[in-house]
Image (cartoon, rainbow, N blue to C red; front, side, top):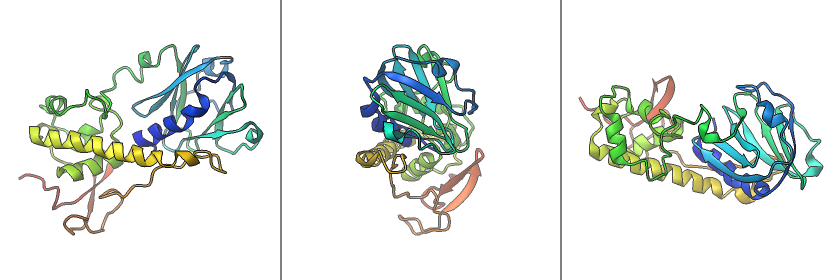
Length: 274
């Protein structure tokens, strides 16, 4: 599933091709995604793209006719094509945004769990109204996390993946951050100490920043022959490494289902207090 770094990579990758351009046409081949594509989008013409932003895992195309909110769902991706590639349409190429200069932003989504929605102002849309702070912002601090964790009996992994608490810390990055912070994923959020919150906020910012930077190294190749962007390659410490030795202590990495998500951790480096 595309997470915050992938979405940020997409924002940075498509922005140079789209910002300042005029929308000539938006072709919707499959309107039935997670929600039906907003009719305002299907009718949008001659709108000027003023900026492309990200909020949590949502990509926002801001125009003088309102904002387009895009979510990549479980399997979605964006690519930039040129006019001579318009007719090379794949089975899962559901939406094309075509600009007056012939540039095409193509949305591909095999599982159709993403969305293309319209709002006069994205921040006022119900999907974005109650989101927590961005993890890389100044609003996400150890004091904030500690205060939010009080009286929360939920596992700390589930806690930091809650978009009401902080946005964009998906399964991969929650596992990696908790490992780097030396915190067992099942520890109740209310039992996090101030020192642990300081460490956890620090490593969440480090992990996400590193992933975004690594994603950025592929931007020069953003337009590929298959029209899909290249995402970051990352050396993961625990995620996806069940049964392999921990890089720090040599103990075998274990997994457990927490909050309906497969969770990877080192039982020695991340001991659960008795």
